[in-house]
Image (cartoon, rainbow, N blue to C red; front, side, top):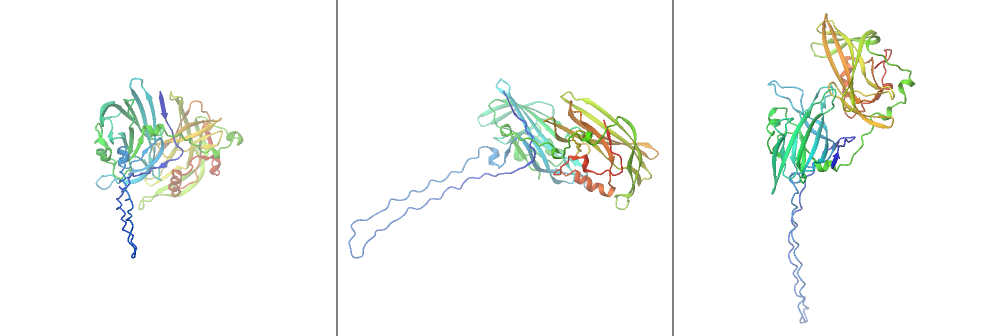
Length: 465
């Protein structure tokens, strides 16, 4: 029997740390005392005494159900969550990382299968989207592992891709666990830093959990926990938040469907309606924009000297390959020349390019270089995922010529055939570029846009496939 909890939520939910505490014991109430009621002129017939009021029994303080409850740690289920972790892009004079805090987005996914021999296999996946600075620089500092929700004991195998057996004592019970993990790094073809865990445990073991946190980018906090049991509160993570996910909580999570990206901007039969056609591989001449840039040696900033519309040359090449899992990879590469006039001056084309769907006119941009962005696409009533990444490389050709190659990488279902590559002139100067990139890299901005949403002026808008 297989239970599945593979759910990706549309929006990231904020982590709430709810500390539990018991009621204070009740205090005793003194007995009521009643004196005789006597008339001053008469002899009393009897003395009346009221029954004493019983003292309330003290209220017992609830005993925490497990380590997580005792420490005020919320156990999360499947889906997307946010947490604060370390980010860094600079070193100090001594070569140490200058640390800051930034908000990460992460998700937890899990599957469980009964092996029929008294054991079950749990497959857990932790995904983290790298933190992207406004200028496109990205970073992540992530560590995670298995944690027993009852005792708070955490464990990570000694090395990736290696199964390690260990024993877990939980009260009077002893469980034998076998565990392995692997890591997949973010790239132009993959959008996350992913840690995958495989746990084989007794079928009656119900306290499996996994944790995720950040670290200070030194080796010690990461390596000192490997291959050993370590109580969760003793794992060094500094000011990074620590999230705990429960397997049972994840399996019980109700699925939420992620909406189609850019659906409200889609146009029916966009290419046909606008009379657009595509070109093939090879060299081409086009009307573009060239910018003369100069490095200001006093401020260190690159400044625009002039911008000129002119006829320019470029080339396009495409590669396509099946990935053997029902998906394919398509890589389209634009190549152009940058001319270095001196160490401080250069002439460079101003180009806007990427991947567009010819049926809807929707553009799916990458978030930044070397980290793919994942999108939900709808076609003919069916929804599927694609990922879009970008790479850039330069080659010194001599005589001040630098050959620049800008590639866009698409991972999509094998039967998806509506993606084309586009290129046009970008009306932007060096002074505008930082602001523009900052806008495009804000995670709360709708990243999918229509070809109708930008003005390419008198430059050519070219499509290739």
